[in-house]
Length: 415
Image (cartoon, rainbow, N blue to C red; front, side):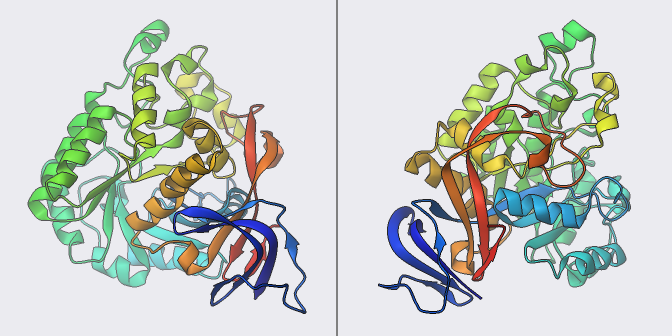
């Protein structure tokens, strides 16, 4: 397959270069002096050709919950958002905790144009008690291990799981929260929780867990990824551990950069998220750290929820939001706008960084591109989301920029 673009700004060696003609093929990228014969060009009109994006937490609800969402819906969401790669969470029904379920998922996604990678559970049924067949799950197709969004197991179990995982070429993705605070309503401890009489999650539920993850990883020597950190002190601990030689990476959930505790006043169920939103001061500091390059990646945390599960009282609703379709323009807004400088930073956070966490090379080197229109205006509505759900806190908001197409190994998708 071949795709010919006219007048695109192409990402090359960390900067954007205007190119009159760009030819994308299965074998790489070429810049011919004139349009090759026999190929109908796509008019880019100054749009950006960026490395395709990668997501570190995608819950497409299959297998088991196909009435909510499917891998086909997930593929459509990735296409609309500019993602060529996504890591599937093990929190399915059934949980991805044995080789048979891994193989079932692999068979359902392996022929899709995009790369849906499988994170297997670090414990049977994600209960943190019994070790699964980790090596066998890798042989069946798993490329990472995770505790999903469950609380951490005991330190002893964590040591056993990381020791076992060292036999596999996989990074272990761990969500840092103490198990006692991993269920129930997700709001931060503070004035909003007090106002509505809700049990708030204290900050130390995260920081204690981050410390435990780092220290066990240090002792065992296993590579870990701390997923969805929300506190500056967590980022600082991780940075210090990196400097000391611990193989640890981290991501920040995008919604925690876009919203904060004050947005919970009124208890809008679309903002019932895991982890909980933090204070405005914490949010501002985290955004500063993200801009400064202190984290490896940002995660959209794509979690489809049925409409009826978002219409009850806040504490009875299901946490989560969809977000692949709106992730990149929202990140640009968080970073301060769509200048070439912020676009470069966003590429690092949503493409190069996540791919390094997943053990992958750059998307552009793999022939995976996104055609980005910086001038498009998106007023977020339910029609912008794939599948039958649109549980997004962005509904009605205006975002700048839009993915026009994915180009995967020369094949144009979605234009």
